[in-house]
Length: 144
Ligand code: ZN
Image 1 (tube, rainbow, N blue to C red):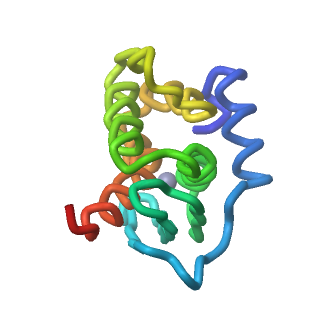
Image 2: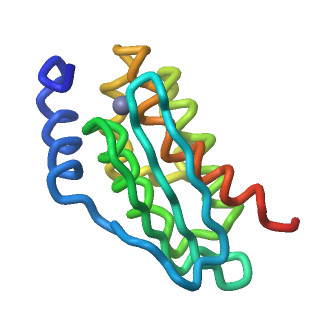
């Protein structure tokens, strides 16, 4: 379906798929979580290293379709430097984007914006959402 996307969105997604950023593992990760989207066969592991309330390093490892892997690359790119509440706001913004809402002006979603093109294909929204669902799961293991 990737060829059905608007060219602008498609190019950003394919660029991240072919040259993903932040791939790897963190031996000293503060939180790690894994998830899967069985409908499509996507798998993802997210590792975050936190210093106090801030993400200092984010890495992912995964396999699956272009959308799931590009989304993981786009998301990890946005995580480093954000505080946990800021990451939660980013996730909330992306859930809104997938439902057709413009992100809050105070939240910079970066290349994740390109995933807006995916919402025309409801079955693939789960591919995109896997990345933030796994991050949310990882953060949920933190004591608040
Ligand atoms: Zn997928």
